[in-house]
Each structure stands twice: as structure tokens, then as C-alpha cells.
Length: 169
Image (cartoon, rainbow, N blue to C red; front, top):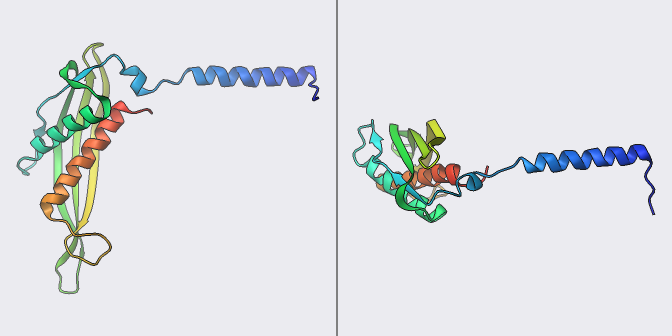
């Protein structure tokens, strides 16, 4: 049997008190959003010349909310966004100066508001998503067309955005 002196008991009690108080302050975003049952994904603004990007992104965000949160369409909350930049750049060339790998970059801002409590939950001014892809075979990854890469960029952006809103910190 281990015996503790009075100073050790005080230290142990203080440590346990600190741990219990510190642990009680944690709340996940999921807990904070538990009263929300629905979301409206408003049309996303597109400040780029890439036609249709905003429609694909809005649909992907809508699907991701449905998948991750089981929220239906409704007025408990609202998601609004603006695509500010969409660029395609060459990352590498072959010996004949033909592109082998590209990079797609999308920058946007978005706001997620809790309309039940009139509170902005997240206001992201510079969300950036990057997708690198090859257009030729035999470089470690299967090649993608520009359209396939763009769709992956949109889907990955929607996943990251919705995760940042509904999942735990």
C-alpha cells in the first residue's frame, strides 16, 4: 500500500481539479450545432471566367451537408460563398516541352450562419483548395482529364468546407 503525505495529497487533488475543470470546457462544433436540422445552400457567386464552377460547387456542398450532417434543405442555417480565383498552371513538362502535370487552384470565401440563433458560425475569407494531376501515364498516378480534375477539386473542396463546419474541433 502506498501512503501519501499531506503535501502529496494536496498536489494530487489540485491536479485532479485542474484536469476536471479543463476537460469540462470542451465542446465540439457538432454539439454547438445540434439544434440545426436544415441548411440552405444559396447560389455561389463566381468571380472567375470558369463557367459552371459555381453550380458544381453548390451541388457538391449541398450533397456533402446531406451526407455528413443529415441536414435537409431548410431555413435553420445558410451557406453562402464566392469563388474568387480559379487557375490552372503547368507543374512539369516532358523532354519535348509538353505538359505532364498541372495544378488547379481555387480560392473562395464562404459564410455559414446559424439562423435559429442569429449567429455566424464560420466566416472564411481565404479558403484555398489545390489539386495536382497528371495528363500522361507512367508517372505514378493515373492521368486525368481537365474535367475530371476540376470535378475532384470541387468535391475535395466541398468535403473540406463541410468538415470544417460540422465536425469536431
